Image 1 (cartoon, rainbow, N blue to C red):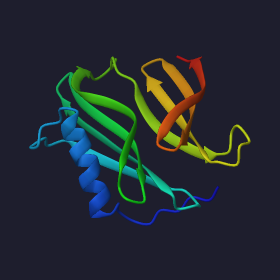
Image 2 (cartoon, rainbow, N blue to C red):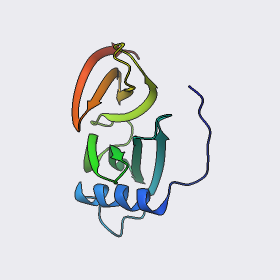
Image 3 (tube, one colour):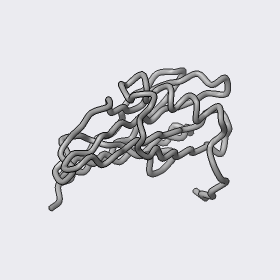
Amino acid sequence: MQCEQHGQPSSNVRAILIRELQRLGMPANANGQTYFTVWESARPTWTIAEADYSRLAGPEIELSEVVVILDQNSHVLVLRQLPFQKTDADVPAVTQWSPIDLADVDGDGQLDIILEGDAYEDHWLEVVSVHDGAIQTIFSGLGYYL
């Protein structure tokens, strides 16, 4: 795969992701930082988009996150989500997800989404297959590190 940065996400994608974060409880006037990641497949049938909100508030951190698939008509399919919450900034009690690759993992000719999950001292790799609007986890492996 070849990845290239092409600037900011479109206003439509940003609006969809902000709406999803607010659906997960993020206040409309939240004053933390929101970071966006958008991956488009080589075959432009869908896009993976992620929004990651955080704000440090003393010994706590406010977090919310959503990873979605958007089809050509901007229909949203949520892959992973982290509802808005406060947790310990040093030892957060949450799992955060990020797309790390697109590959045909199971040899069916379709691109699958490889996600990384991170929870304080645990790490996951999961492979998600999307067919006809249905999500199926085809691999989940847990690794542990200190």
